Length: 373
Ligand code: B12
Ligand code: SF4
Ligand code: SF4
Image (cartoon, rainbow, N blue to C red; front, side, top):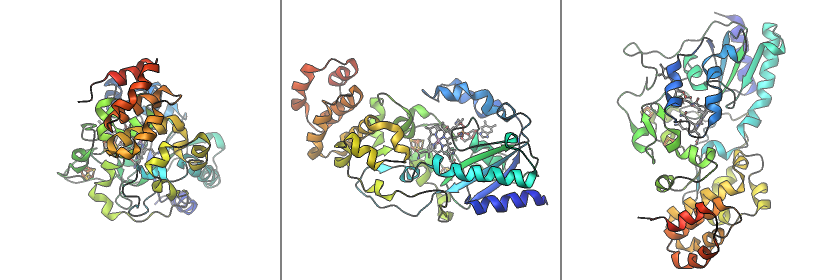
């Protein structure tokens, strides 16, 4: 038993991390990332390609790195209210986790300094944005297994763990990954014959078990894509205004999820209560106030209005037409393009005619011209 490892684990759990597991670092097999990039499945996330070498080799992130401490923060808070309202990814119904987890990572670094006699340059921590293949390392550390939905699934927390990583030059005895006598699969290890997540995906985004083609994923389209959402994916977005949890929600492993302590998260339950009508009418001031400190603020108001137009077009609610028509004359061509689509979906072709005469932007004109069948 590595006493130093157990002391670090205990102290990091006390800081608010719901799971703390250790693994030894080595280069990752290129198959974990290269084929995905080569197939262009990262879409416009060029930063994934730029940092690929580092993602595959932690030694390029921190020279001499020996161990990764993989950390899980559960955000499971039970079933949600908000039926009939726009649907937000669960993680987004909190203040931005990058900001709220970071202070605990700073404190975790101090623990490593104290327990291992390390100095600041001998470890690095990341939550989401670093060049680290977080799910793969988390699986190696035994935090959970990688499901066919590509998620790191924990036996204790289901699909509802946010991940963070500390790379360090300190050596720890590694924790055991989950293994199965009958299988050495890396993806779908505890899925058996189940394919619920892949079957439920509203945009058919799974290129294979455990492989998401981001270009088809609602999460990518509503959060990462800064431009036009492809027309053929809009219907599948349904009422999902920001992110997507469908392949997480349907997973039977959630049955075992314990409610998270959420010591490192700040719940913003009011977001799920917002009416679509209210969102379509947001002013910049109100947007800044409502989404202050949430991840949604990074989308900018125009991105959110774009998504809201898609949700409005899918809603079939013709009483939204006045708000949508107003957005068809918005300053932003991005918003106008999606508002034109939504207005047509809601039967507003005639009302759009006058606005079309004044339109000059090519993308918006293409929306006017497009066949909606
Ligand atoms: C880019 C990215 C996205 C993209 C692409 C998603 C994707 N599947 O790759 C988009 C925008 C679509 C996205 C969506 C979401 N994301 Co995201 N995303 C990331 C990010 C920044 C990088 C992921 C990455 O490297 N992708 C490339 C693929 C190839 O790698 P991967 O899926 O991570 O890992 C796979 C391979 O390593 C493979 N693998 C492992 N071992 C081996 C071995 C062999 C031999 C082989 C062949 C393969 C293999 O299996 C792994 C799982 O698919 C990570 C943070 C990070 N730094 O890791 C967060 C991260 C993966 N996202 C996260 C979340 C929460 C989400 C969403 C749920 C958000 C939402 N509600 O809308 C969705 C879920 C979509 C899904 N089912 O994957 C969490 C996942 C937590 C968890 N428990 O798994 C992360 C870890 C962020 C965090 N720090 O918490 N995301
Ligand atoms: S997050 Fe949604 S769109 Fe993306 S793969 Fe999962 S179910 Fe499909
Ligand atoms: S829904 Fe089924 S196939 Fe998908 S990750 Fe969960 S157990 Fe695996």
